[in-house]
Amino acid sequence: NAGVTQTPKFQVLKTGQSMTLQCAQDMNHNSMYWYRQDPGMGLRLIYYSASEGTTDKGEVPNGYNVSRLNKREFSLRLESAAPSQTSVYFCASSVGTGRETQYFGPGTRLLVL
Amino acid sequence: AQSVTQPDIHITVSEGASLELRCNYSYGATPYLFWYVQSPGQGLQLLLKYFSGDTLVQGIKGFEAEFKRSQSSFNLRKPSVHWSDAAEYFCAVGSSNTGKLIFGQGTTLQVKP
Image 1: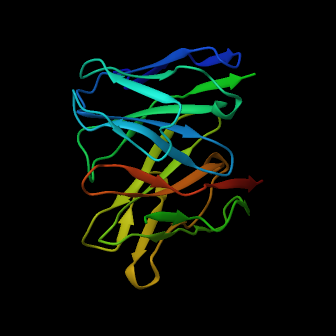
Image 2: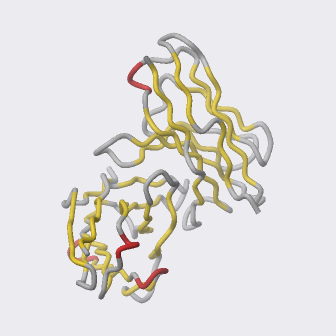
């Protein structure tokens, strides 16, 4: 099993450009999450999807949109990238919410110039 | 509001020495607590978790953690550190309703030969 996969691994954008980060899981998990990781700040939740068809904001949703395309896939879109969105983005999934373990993808490193 | 504090940003220990990484949390109800490890350039891997019951929790790779409600702490320990333990360690508290995780800032562990 691949677990949680993310594409691309690395991306450079210019300010104002848009892009979509893709995430897919093959573990038949119900819940999926997008985090960003910045030095000295740990991971912060951007958006999550508790189940197929639902999405909710996390701590830092401004400047992002998400789509839960189906049970397997959860994409994160930057409509107009800003330098402050330079970060490493992690997708995670879990069987359900609450006490379930979250499984993380390898991350996407994004640089916005 | 929920929060997690890892007081030590960086710790260096000698190989074979014991290790304790500190974690303090703030949460209104009984917390779900997690420790994750991140090797350089990788995603996060779960070391252990606590929900209820025995306050001493065993995890993978020889790690353990102790939940102390009176001190709002969930410190991670290992009796003898190996060079391969060098990584970044994150403590997190989870919501029982939504599954949302709040991460600490992380502690970077360096292991001296």
